[in-house]
Length: 476
Image (tube, rainbow, N blue to C red):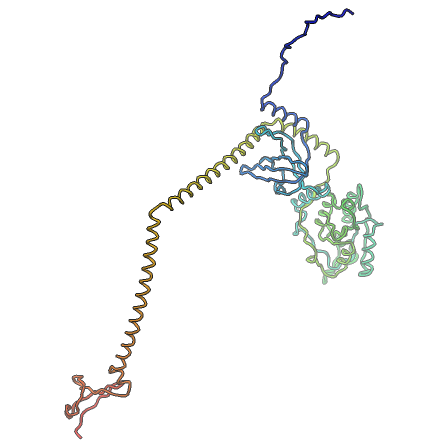
């Protein structure tokens, strides 16, 4: 290969051509980051603690989701009606589902919230609450539809496992308290796959077995020859997963549709299932149910009222797959929806409104401080201050003058009262009060001071302390 010769003066290209470069504006760069986040991350579930919770008058909610190492801005727009907004509060630990995006006005990435779940609540518990709400809305828990149990049952049907501890407990209590009580067992599985269907089928089977009871015409007591008086659905204690068959909708509806009264005794005292809420009576344990059924009177008021909310039926895997696919299409549609831009504008409007409010409050505070300073200076320099001090001095002098005049008036009043008492003592009334009398001419009313001045037959009037005496003069 021939090598190209170079001279000592060959320095190559001293000034290479300027490289081409792409310059982006801040808005273009932010838009590109937003598209990258939405395509790369998309819909996610995030857990954390809520802080800086802020609800705007527009109906939008802004807050921050944080953990020990980071924080994430979140926004819940007014149009998200399916979200339980009452769960959102400062300090609340939640699970959030939404799309990660960028608020371009501030260059800040944030989460658009679509769903909210309380952290720590399992899938089974959530399914329990949802089905509870559904069935409660349909009226399956209404106290008005609860039927009283027969006071004297002769034959009852039991829906449980033939090998379970619940049946042994019920038999032990009944043998001890009412051996004559007849039992009809509809055996079924009480946990595991397909247990709910077997329980519902057993309840329907006992209803088909039952016939109208024959009651005594006088006492009203059901004759033992009747098929069934009520149904007891029971099993022993266990975990939530073990008791889940009694939380299925098919069991709840079978109890609701039962023509016979149903007693539910599932698990221990702390365990509550859907069957407990739908049944006509809930017993804490299988043994407690047997004791209730052997009593002579209905004690419904001694048991807890059943009226909370219900669970929704557990979703099958195929339905979950379809829902996930629907969620994916919904998310893609939401990203392309014109409301996204409108939501950004509304969020920016909220920011501007808050900034305007802060500026207005700051201006009002500054003007108030300046006004108070000017008022203080004017008060120190105004002549009205001295006039006010003089008025205050005149007021004090006037008050002192009134006090002296009042004291002088009281002294003169006391002196006047003393002279009035003395005058009253020396007056005619006082003389009469001491036992003296005054003799007057009855015709003229003139006082008589000389006995020689009267004439025989002259009428006289003598005035005493109390009353007057008329008399006539006679010569002695």
